[in-house]
Image (cartoon, rainbow, N blue to C red; front, top):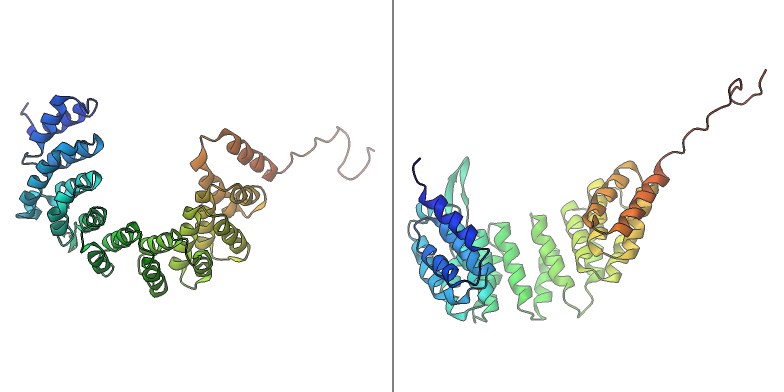
Length: 328
C-alpha cells in the first residue's frame, strides 16, 4: 500500500497530543509547522495552542506568510492561516501583530457551486481579536471596519473585538448596531450580548424591548442574548414576554433563553410548560432541558411534569355494570 505522508503526519500529531509536554512533542510540532500540507500545519497549530507551547510562536509567525502566496491552492478553506492565528491569539504575543494585521484584511474567494465563497471570515474575526488582546493601537478602528464586512462571521468578530476592549463607550456603538439591525440573527445576538455585558446605563430594558419587534430575527436574537447574560432582571423580561408571544419561532427562542439562563425561576416556567403548556411548547421545553441531562434532580422534576401531563388511566369497570348506570 502506498504511503500517505499527510495521513502519517496527522496521526503522529494526534498521538503526540497525549504527551503535550515532552521535548519530542515540541520538536514534532515545530517540524510539522513547516510541512507542505495546510491540514498538517493547521493540526500542528492546534497542538501548539492546546498544549500552550508559546515557545513556538516564532515558528507560527514564520509559517503564516507562506499560505498567503497562491492561497487557494496552498491553503484551501483557509485552515492553516486560521489555525495559526488562533494559536497566536491564545499566546497573546504582541510580536504576532504583523500576522494579525495581514490576517484581518485577507479575503479568500474559492470556487463553489454558484458564486465563489469567501473562506476567510473567521481568519479576519480572529485576527481582529488578536489585535485587541495585544493592545495594537489600530485595533478598535479595524474592529469598526469589520462591522460592515460582507460576511456575518467577520461582522460578529468585529463586535466581539470591540466588547473585549472593555471600553465603556463601545456600548453606544452597540446600541446603534442593535437599532440599525442586521440581516444575520447571529450578528444581532452578538450586539445584544455585548451590550448586556456593560453594567452602566442598564441595557436590559433596551434589549427586552426588542422582544416585541415585528422583525422575528431581532426578537429571537434578543431572547437568546437575555438568556445568555444570566441576569435576574433578564429572566423576568423573558418570563413576562412568553404568555403574550404568539409567534412559534419567537416562543421557542424565549424557551431556549430561559434554559440558557440557568435560573430556577426560569426552570419553573419551563416545567409549567412541560406539564400544562401546548404540545409544541411542552415538547420544546423538554428538548431544551435535556441540556441538563446530568442534573438528576432537575430531570426528576421534568419527569414529574410529564407524568402530570399524561391523562389518568381509565378505571376498570366492574363486570356486569354499565357506564353511568346500575347492574340490571
